Image 1: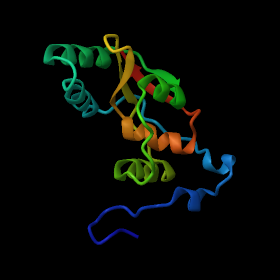
Image 2: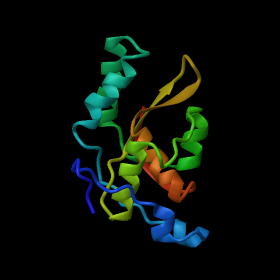
Image 3: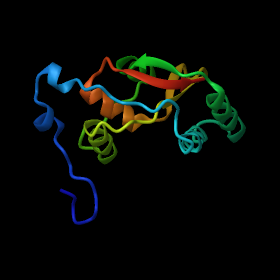
Image 4: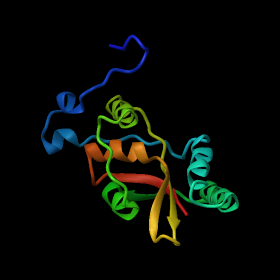
Length: 144
């Protein structure tokens, strides 16, 4: 049932999927390549901490990079970011997409050598949503 505002319902994945590890682990479907709008989003995010030219060059590299895959838990460890829970509206929306077996866009990653950490340039909420189902899930991504 959709809300009066036209939004998707807030689905409780535990209620739908059960509580055992086996029931919680879902096969996440992924697109073969990131969507076109993911690259400008990554550039916008990277330009917050990098100068414009460096952010633009990083995104151009991402567009040419080969697809790779890393475990969700390893991406989070390398990024140092906190895990957002299912109550976050964007994470909830991506969880609903996973439950409905809709394909997600791969994640865009940037190695920030100056700070010695991994930056999730685009796909943080998707990462959090997938992690709630399976921390060992292999996440397709482009990394530069």
